[in-house]
Amino acid sequence: MGGGMFTRIAIYHVPAGDLGAFGARWLGWDIAQGHVSAQTGELYPAQAEVTARPRRYGLHATIKPPFRLAGRASFAALSQAMEKLCAQLEPVTLSGLEIARMGRFLALLPKGGVDGLNALAARVVVDLDEFRAPLSAAELDRRRKGRLSPSKASNLLRWGYPHVMQDFRFHITLTGPLDDETAGRVYTSLRSHLSELVSGPYPVDSLSLVGEDDQGHFHEIERYPLASVP
Image (cartoon, rainbow, N blue to C red):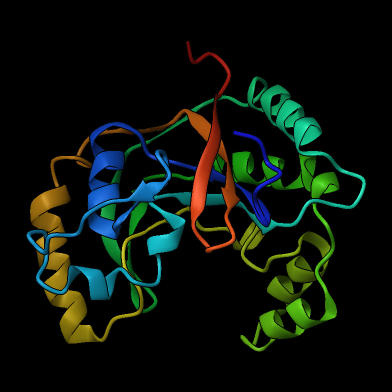
């Protein structure tokens, strides 16, 4: 699948295996296959409601946030640069993942040290930035409405997104914003389904080039193994 059909491109870590399959069922969108996944409500009665906001993104952790290709950049060149970069990046194994509050959201957050993971994300942001078109004035104004800290405001101007570099926090979003009572109920339900899937060490051993279609859904275009991964 080429990149011409997509409005924006991003670099994600897309969970595979049983966790990836659960994510498709939970969010209602299979980013790897690029199609809707039925939400039956068996995982949580109001499943469709609490996952409405993150659904179009699919289960993922953002590494380089969505961007438009720069005017002179080609998708083919980006793909080649991505492949070359991933061949140089060492995989990172996290101690595990845990369900936790992140602001008003529930997400999977890493256990243990994250220095290697943060360094990996920073390298991707920097090395592929030549392919990113600058934000428009309207996009900058919209982002600034979030009352950014000085470092996040600086990131926005330099890298096109506030939550990168020193402000990066690896997370796999599971819900939209929830009140405390609803968050407690959803947490209990998710823990019963996810505990075994995230209890052991978690390898970040691949990155994916993803694209946003004209309906706002993200699709995995290509997955690249990191160095030393067969």
